[in-house]
Amino acid sequence: MLKNVYDVAVIGAGPAGCKTAELAAKAGLKVLLLEEHEEIGRPVQCTGIDSHRILPLSGLGKEIVMNVVHKARFCVKNSFLELDSPKPVYVIDRHKLDKGIAKLAAKQGADMITGSRFIGFERANPLTIKTSTGVYKAKMIVGADGPNSTVAKRANIELPKDYVIGYQETVNDDFSENIVELWFGKNITPDFFAWVVPENKDWARVGIASKTKPVEYFRNFMKSRFGIDYRKKDVLGGVIRYGIIKTSVADNVLLVGDAACHVKPYSGGGIIYGLIAARYAAQACTLAVNSNRFDKGFLFEAYDRKWKKELLPGIRRGLVLHKLIHAMPDWMLALSLNVSKLFKPSLSKLDMDLLFNQ
Image (cartoon, rainbow, N blue to C red; front, side, top):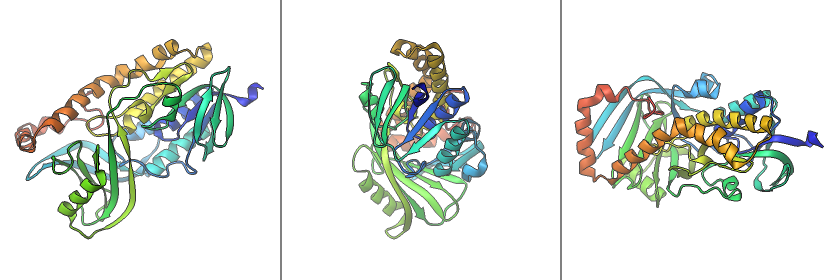
């Protein structure tokens, strides 16, 4: 019977879930990785722009890189600030990223089932996990199932309430391959910002996020930035949840990645934070299985406290920055950009993924 019981069932095969599965399997645990979609990495649900850290954290090479940028242009009305990055910033292929880490997990011995939607679980010894493809047994669950985590709901883990809805299209135009554009202002979107991330000189990922009417704000931005007629492909959208989760654990359960709000509040990006937290998640799973301790108190000390020590300072400060930026009227934002030009050398040294963790 024990042959049919997994040590860990990871729900969700995004970067954080796949990396947790890989590292837990590498530590000798019997791991099951469940993904609701038929293909890992599809549909793409992320803009995919990250610092140089993405390569060592993912364990992958430059095969996941579509473009390299070295500049960011911040725009408010007619004011702008252009910053150089001392290190490369990668525009990545999210499909290759997710699939690549999943292959690493499989190489370490993790079992993988796609097209398997998590429904819920029953507390028993071991847990009974119900999915659209059948019932599985595991000692613990890792919820890596995104910002609207079903695992969190079934485990009664409360998620932060703040969120925006992102909408993005890949647009055809003439682009500078080396520059990312970030557009702020109440006329652009009152809650977040718009972005233009070049894949190459002909195509860029253009998107916007807002609490309400993201498509309407997107259309208005596109009209002002590109005109009425343009070619597009790869339309995507989704929820970006941000904030501070009270706890990311329950008995036999822990959350990682977007499910645990491992997200930068000032940008909405979560890949780097999720991959960092995945290390702690795998370590906690290994400790729990080897100690036969799956209670909330044990997982809090083994996981919650540890990832928060590294990531929570940045999340807290990122929330302050987010609230400050979006509380400012446009004229004050424009003035701030102009004043910031005096500090360009210092600002250019900031790490876009770990802005407050240096």
